[in-house]
Length: 119
Image (cartoon, rainbow, N blue to C red; front, side, top):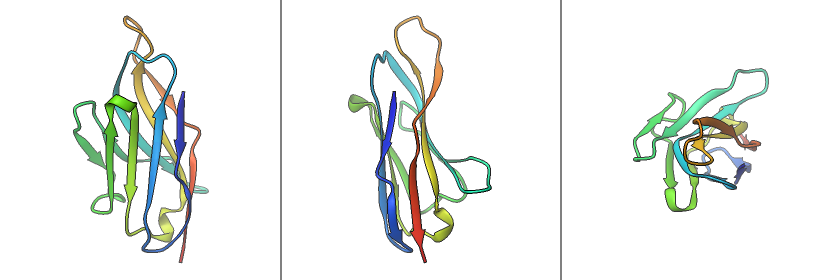
């Protein structure tokens, strides 16, 4: 129900823009988030955005990444600038949503998109 895209190979100092679209039966979406997981490391929060546009960033993303969303398209974006080799990871999107009115809020995860930053 969440489809992430936009990953790829980029040189250090370059930029990438990730997208994540929520599709299917959706009544409402609350927070949308990006996480990443590097080989041998735990998954960590990169950035989060509320339905009202309030943002929160992990320490690794502050000053370099920008999260945004288009509520009409049920889409969240992650603009990544000044990329570093240590940003190499699989990036996952997550959305807290209700598929229909009266349903419980539930977290849905995208399948992940690989970002590789070469030095």
